[in-house]
Amino acid sequence: MLLLDRVEPYGKALDAHRAQGALIGLVPTMGALHEGHLSLIEQAARECDVVVVSVYVNPLQFGPAEDLASYPRDVEGDRAKAAAAGADYVLAPSETEMFGVAPATTVHVAGLTKYFEGAVRPGHFDGVATIVTKLLALTGPCRAYFGEKDYQQLAVIRRLVKDLSFPVEVRGCPTVRDIDGLALSSRNAYLSAEERRVAPALFGALRAGKIAVEDQHVDDAGVVESIMAESIPPIAGIGLDYAAVADPDDLVPLRRIEGPVRLLIAARLGRTRLIDNLAARPQ
Ligand code: AMP
Image (cartoon, rainbow, N blue to C red; front, side, top):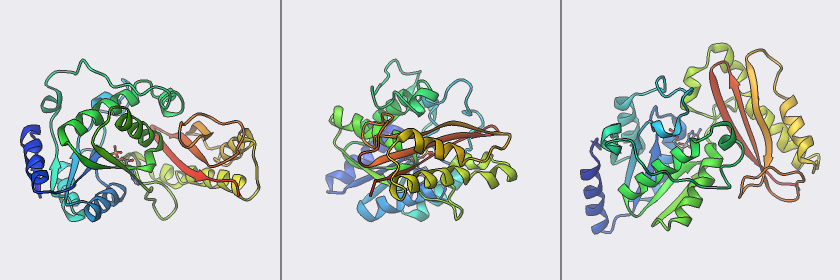
């Protein structure tokens, strides 16, 4: 396993592999790797000849009041975990290596970014789309693996790859959860013991929404949203940003449920913001 912090040798190494007919699998991350990330790397290792994990805490996708400075960083630990999961390269560039100076170019995906995370975190998806565009350009033809955990992000990336004709096949991978249902996230490390105890309430709310859609045949999205919101315990320190029913493809809020939907939730627990989502389909 090779750790690279320079983008030029990275591009050359991948060109050499492709010249020999290798299929490259790319797993972009912000590091602090956990089992969720590792499941993406393992899937890439099963499906590709050469697996690359990028570790880059992307300043462009953090708002001014967000946790960029405190975001967990552990490149040595990430390198060992990525290698054990089947990675051949870890690309961990500095900010200067990535952009020299701050980029003058922004990639904006309209429509899909209007609601939910796009509304709560202005500019977030521009930062994501810009860095993913850069990573795909540096990597070249590949399969790129992203988690359904960040469902709206996955939709944004699928769209930008299609719109800009990148020679990339996007693979969406299922969310890995802890035993009590909490979706794994690097940000779970911020939770106090008490917050960690209540955090599975997000998944509980999604399951309550799914039962309403699938078993109780509720077709009024507003009712499903209330069921989800009300299943969050009214504890001081929990703040719900949204509990919503969205179209699974274009991520617009729905009023009536007439086919498959995506249930989306975001909440703040103390200083930590968590998101999760689940598919639901009327029976
Ligand atoms: P991040 O480091 O948070 O930017 O995540 C890097 C990639 O891992 C993204 O594609 C995420 O959607 C994915 N990911 C994060 N958490 C999970 C999880 N619990 N299960 C599956 N994929 C995940």
